[in-house]
Length: 379
Ligand SMILES: *Cc1c(COP(=O)(O)O)cnc(C)c1O
Image 1 (cartoon, protein in one colour):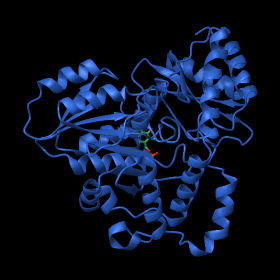
Image 2 (tube, rainbow, N blue to C red; image 1 turned 180 degrees about the vertical axis):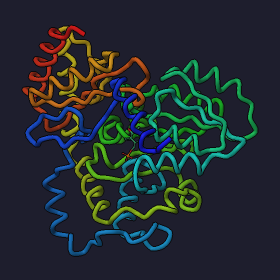
Image 3 (cartoon, rainbow, N blue to C red; image 1 turned 135 degrees about the vertical axis):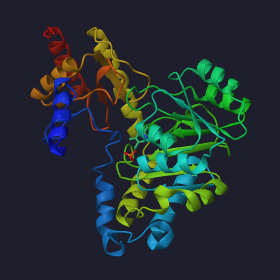
């Protein structure tokens, strides 16, 4: 069969199942409840002004991978600032969160090892495990009994790793990290915690480990991205000196990919300083998130809320999720419908994210229209 014809057939099937997706450029005057720019730093005036003042000094591209000649002073400064922030010995800045997870997991695992992974971990973690030669064991979402049952049974010669999102990207809930750490210590496992959505938000902005009053140690690897609350692009891995040294030597997504632009790293560094200096940003976001939960509840709309700025309305049916999204859009509100395969079958949902730039009034509008749309929906 002809290649294009085959692809067309596959696309048709995606459409029939209400799973077709396209990219769209949203108008500027929308109230956006879908961005991960929680702290409204992607448009930071302060950082833009600083960038203008420094642009002459900055190269636009890094020119090569870090090991060849792409490692620049601003990346070093960013890594030092992130280490301080995350209270670790060392840090490695890499191209993106996706590259961080795929590269990290492959680099530090080998054939004798076992990776225990939460069922709802991010796709980049799943792909990292696929690239690894280690055995994979999936445990039920945030179910520490299931994790312990499974880890207890495995008697391998190599290492054990437990991998989890800190704040789950499509749920908004938080891993019970204190319990997970106890289990990890009991069975001598290394933890990788992906703080993509936790960074800048929970644990005084420092992430999941700190949210539980714990401190980093050499058996905790903290991954995070610079593209969400930090409003920039890129990612980081924080851990011991030995870990980072090893990754510099063995992590393929870092070795064989060009280093981030100094301009981008400059933006990340400036925004990182802002999140530390302006805790009121995340405080407002968390207050607004709770406000949304409470206002919705008054109207008998049961949003899932876990003390993070990611709230969900799980509707199950893909068509219904799309309908709600489209109706909200008619009213200048944007909430993305999240469908399989991003979330499990039968759990299509509206995923609402709250940002520092929202007001009480924006939230009142969202609740008002959600109520109307839900009342008038007759599948
Ligand atoms: C967004 C996300 C990533 C990917 O980060 P990028 O920098 O966008 O590539 C990784 N892990 C989790 C949990 C995420 O939500």
